[in-house]
Each structure stands twice: as structure tokens, then as C-alpha cells.
Image (cartoon, rainbow, N blue to C red; front, side, top):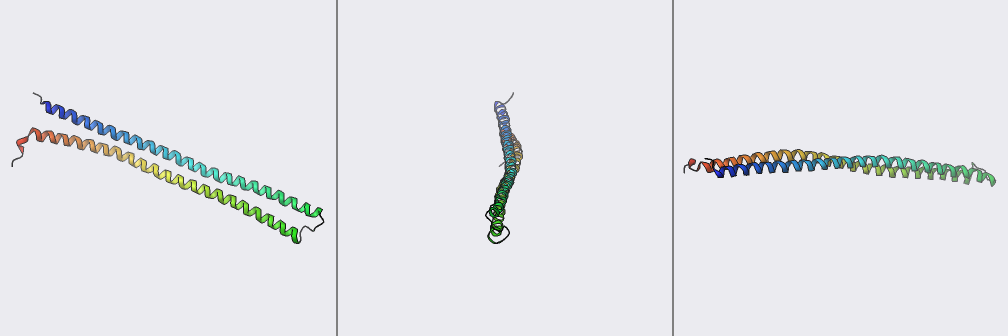
Length: 170
């Protein structure tokens, strides 16, 4: 005849193992989803870096054009007033305008480069988080299998020793 305690212990062991397996699968899915989110966010950060560089280059080009127009309007204005263009104040003003334009252009490019670098650093951090989530996913699954196996062995061991109480001699 079947021992009712053995049946209950067997069912309990199977349910425990199944629960631990389901829990580990759920954890693995959660970490996998985190990895995908981190990968997506890393790609967004990389795209932001590209956009920052392109925007800075565009702004710098627009500034350069503006300063070229200012510079081009200076010479005719001085010539119209009867001042010699390539001497003294007009020459100094022309040089100052050119230098100011170059400095503003470099400032815009530097700002865009700094913004792009920050976005790339953020992308690197997100990629690291994605790798960590991937490792955690593998660990969750492996840990779940290990816990399920340990639980099964523990239940089998407990049942065996309960079924053979006189086995240990004192």
C-alpha cells in the first residue's frame, strides 16, 4: 500500500521544484527585458551624440557665413567713407572680426563635441548595464536550476530518512 505521507511529500517536492523553476524563468525574462531596454537607451545616446555633433557643425557653418557677410560689408562701408581699406583701423577691425568669428565657431564646435562626448559616455554606461543584465539573466536561470535540484534532493533525503528511522544507530 502507498504511504500517504510519501505521496504528499512527492507532490510537495514537485510543486517546490516547479515554483523555483518558474521563478527563475521569470527573473531571467526580467533581466533580458532590462538588457533590451539598456541596449535601446545606449543606441539613443549614440544617436544623440551624432545629432549633437551635426547640430554643432551646422551652427558653426551658419556663424561662419554670418561673419563672412559682416566682413564683406565692412570693406565697402569703409571704402564709401573714403578710408583706406588695408591700413590702420579698417585692417584692425577686419582682423578682429575674423578672429571673433573663428573663436565663436570653435566655441560652438567645442560645445557640440562636449555634448557628444557626454552622450557617448552615457551610451557606454548603458552598454555596461546591458551586459550586467545579461549576466544576471544567465545567473538567475542557473540559480533556479540549482535551487530546484537542491530542493528535490533535500526532499528526497528527508523522505528517505523518515522512511528509515532505525537506520542510524546511536
